[in-house]
Length: 332
Image (cartoon, rainbow, N blue to C red; front, top):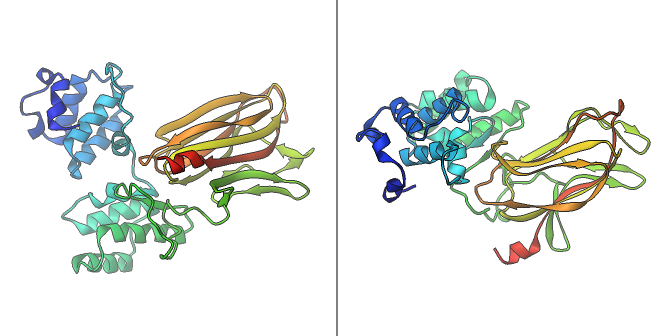
């Protein structure tokens, strides 16, 4: 939203000095103007918006987030900025959500970032080194966030970083691969086939078993009658990586009981944006299209076994993969 677009909003519903109000009063005023109910704007979401204002976020973006949440709005802008404001920072780190925290207090910034990404406070030595580097301008806050993500990974956590400033995937052919970057796909998960980018999640290898992509969470592979014996719940989820923008085809080839159902979901931004969602009953072989935009970060494919009459659910996954459309690559 820009200042010129404010005429689209009923300004008579908010105080004339609304942009001079405190963060709490500002959010409350606009929530009232948009008639937001408790279901549309929970207390947690309200506090996230207030924190965003305190961290220096443009207040017009907060208005966008509140307008997007309103069921009375005739327009539902699918604005990632609104989602990033609502998203609680965690080990999947959007750099800007950390660098803006407490701009005049590096110690508070370090403690906040360590707590959110690593789930702990920095050690005395970690705090001393990073605070010293920040004070001497040897390292930027962006550099520090990347360091902390690397520390979380060394602690045994699955942590990744990404940045809103990098709208286009950079050419890293001459640079060392950073495994903590969400733009870096894990080895073995991405390869070219007939000129197309292909991500293999699960693929049956005849006579040998199954190829399962790294950085995927999945149920234990218990082979029964040539398939998997599974339990209701998430079957596979991952990899929460940032993929190149374009049209992607999700290929599914699976066999299950005619009465069995499996839910398929493709999400981004740590689950805040649902890009595709459907339920498959019985066996299926085919593809579905997912449009991934530059603002979609931490993309994840999820398969969920739903409750079925069968006391011992069984499924045979022949192929679960994503292929980027070459047509969209050539004609962005």
